[in-house]
Image (cartoon, rainbow, N blue to C red; front, top):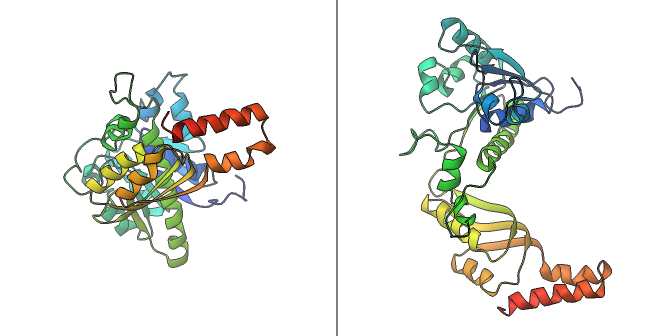
Length: 296
């Protein structure tokens, strides 16, 4: 293993299945951590059946499990459960995405693991958090695309909401879980303290909306309304590129009492484009911008 990788020496126990949890743990593996994944005997993690299989792998399973060591362990057996607990007692990070309450019956919930390992960073990747009215509801990528409003901005020719044809929520949840756990490692190293990381929204918490770009601002309004309906405070949006040519965009966001922050717009492109494109292309760009600004 490369000694220059940042998480060399960090031990991670991956109890999760599917995409989101395993994707979180995979990022630690690719950065040098020793990640041990426990899988059910026989069929293994269900990501191995997600897509077209080649042997006992699929493109998804290779993506989310690369760099890990795998053990086939039956958590329903006393021996298998003992193996899991011994690993949990010695690891820096534990990642799981079981239904709420499932691991408590096995003695592998946060409170139980904390007693064995007070420095544990315990990552619970759930759809609706450990508390609240939806805590017991299952959450797949499709369910969360619908619940978050993502489908509402991806409509078919008839205007009906459609699922984005990739596991956008699962991969995003895995990436953000990794980022949160990576930050918690600092507290573990400096203060000797662990952390429970889960996707629970606390009422009146401040949320920042970050995206790659904004056109007319319509999708941002959907997201803001969804977040505010869940008792979150939204005051700022950050994007890399803002069209800034739709007359109603800024007005609608101002009505929602939201600040839009961006790095560049079409007007910035227009200012520097003569140095990079032909006169004809410059004219087409000017006509495009003018047509939208004038509502044509």
